[in-house]
Image (cartoon, rainbow, N blue to C red):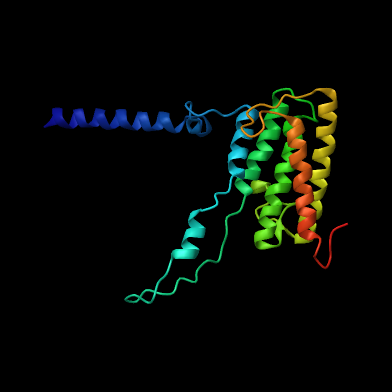
Length: 219
């Protein structure tokens, strides 16, 4: 009996020491996943953004809106519950990450990823404001530094988007003239900045046309 108690005591002691030793380790070090990269090339983030731009012509929301029906089938209900929409803030976080990674890898302040980052910001913010109206813009994407971002008016969003598109066009013009093209990972236009410049200006024209019949059009 004494031998059994002694053995149990040593087992508990060893377990306590193991737990104590583990608790002394740096939690942030334990949290790191060695199998998951902490940094990626800007080109890979760029490629993901291009995929996020894709909008299926027949997605689940459209299918539900057209075909979902409920005729009070045994205490069911009429499904008038479509009260929300998808937003693009997660994708916009990746836009900022793409710009950050380009600079981290030695790119100049004006580079293809920075120029197209402005286009992506304009595209996704316009997409959101067309769906829901006022959205956080100037105070958005600040994480825990601002958990209650101020909402910007739809007009302010459009004005900022048009400014981004103008800046993107200007930067692409200078990059093309200087032959400075470090773009990679482009599944749409094969890293051709001239084609991207056409996209930027075409999209700006599209935004302006959508505003042309409004009572108050941004100047």
